[in-house]
Length: 333
Ligand SMILES: NC(=O)c1ccc[n+]([C@@H]2O[C@H](COP(=O)([O-])OP(=O)(O)OC[C@H]3O[C@@H](n4cnc5c(N)ncnc54)[C@H](OP(=O)(O)O)[C@@H]3O)[C@@H](O)[C@H]2O)c1
Image (cartoon, rainbow, N blue to C red):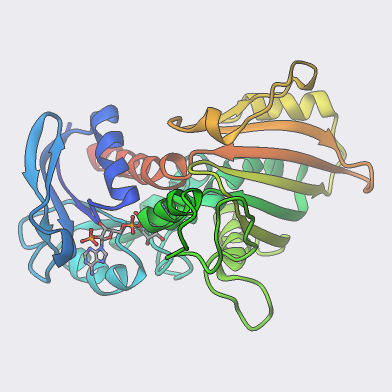
């Protein structure tokens, strides 16, 4: 098996730190590994597989050393500038920012859903938004079987989704200190405002969920609306998803479809208080689905409660899975 040289850009961040854990756990065949951050954290030491590495400041020459894959999680402007530099040097960038996601030349990939799209990459592959990833893992098998007509997303998103700054805002709020990251105190609160507001009244996070779902499922006809809300939970995004289908379904059969879907774990036993929660899914890589019930207000509709670890499946794990698929592809060439 080909061993690869890999770089982690944004290694000192919330997602970057989790990359280290996931890369260790999944034992990627690595020849060399490099870690980058901004000037601020350059010089920081990180431990990977028992060895100490020094984080370097990212620069235009960082990729002049035969790096095969770079996992980027350092914000949109870093990806805008450095992803083309890295890919021009022969490196494939797997990017966690939103910058390249809707570019027609960039595949947007959730391996359980559209791993085949990796094959047409031109040097950049985008990792979708965290709340979109967990939603499409659950929706893809249902779309294949019953053809989705309309989706209503309502999210309950953890503060870790806003990086280290979001996490410390909840810690600060719990101590009665004012927020630094969010526009309002998050402790004891729900804030219906994630990313910036757009002229039509939606937030950019809501637009990402709508646009990215259509791109990943490869269906521009899907009707989708979304309300995304930040809640005082440290980690793990929860989503209420209402779906309307073209075709009729049998509820037991639909549950079976979900049970057999890759990356999905069904936790649905209301009589024993069994349903997924953010605390129970933290540290896991699957997408958990519960509260599966018919929406009696339409002819063929369903309500789902979908929960996943937003830093793992919503970011680091999904990106590492893409890297694994890429390596598999290279080994078959
Ligand atoms: N948190 C999530 O759930 C999540 C999910 C999906 C995608 N994402 C995306 O992943 C990216 C990082 O998110 P995060 O939550 O990990 O943020 P974070 O905790 O704030 O970490 C940001 C990382 O980027 C580095 N960085 C910032 N500016 C840089 C520059 N000019 N050059 C090189 N490195 C730079 C930082 O280095 P310093 O330590 O030097 O500042 C740090 O390592 C964002 O694009 C975000 O949208 C996050």
